[in-house]
Length: 248
Ligand code: NAD
Image (tube, rainbow, N blue to C red; front, top):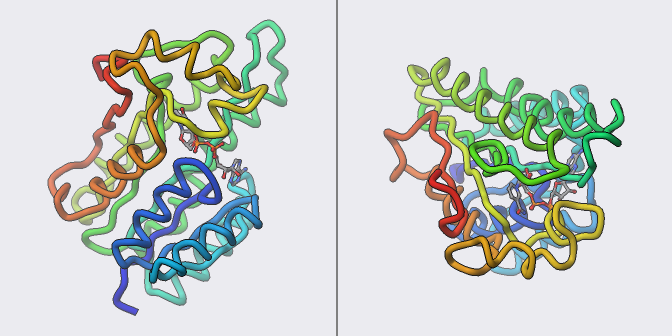
């Protein structure tokens, strides 16, 4: 198969799904992974209905064993992965005074270690021209929101992961970059108990110079660019996509 092999974590809904559709539409073979099997299968069906190529693979990024097995299988079948979008993430809203060890560890485990789990076994088989894109957040760069200390800590760590990997693998032709989204219209932002909840647009829009939430496709477009040869001299960078909210 001479299509690029694109592995996306958390690709059943939200930004991951939008990225899966974008890569599928440009002729790549998309490995849609998620804990949400029905959503992942629906994303694959949507890509195929549009004439693209995709498959669903169940993956909980909290399992090193499962990530090693899946990536090992993909390496064996395709000779290496061309693009990884390390996207799966959670953002529960928890005041610091009520932060349990379990919540702290879960957030760092999914949002930071979960990225390493899929990237690490893929690196040895990745070839010149391969690209890794990790989802950070403006809350990992220079923006804060209350009751998100665990999330900010994880997303700052993602920037360290990006910069460290980028330097270590630059001379092997593997580029590693990130996107730091602002407020994007997904379940993570809108669902009760998550970042801002159902009133996210009303709460956040007054602070955003563009006066609106971002759409998942507007993040997917930047991810697609970072994975393309148009970004061939770009590595170790985190691009802020937030409607002008932060200086980046
Ligand atoms: P979302 O909640 O819509 O989707 C997250 C996806 O990750 C879901 O498909 C979910 O099933 C999956 N996931 C969660 N835990 C998982 C696990 N243990 N293993 C595998 N998959 C798992 O969220 P989103 O807004 O699309 O977020 C995508 C990424 O973008 C996340 O890393 C998030 O932190 C980041 N981000 C989002 C926003 C925003 O405003 N929506 C802002 C900044 C950064």
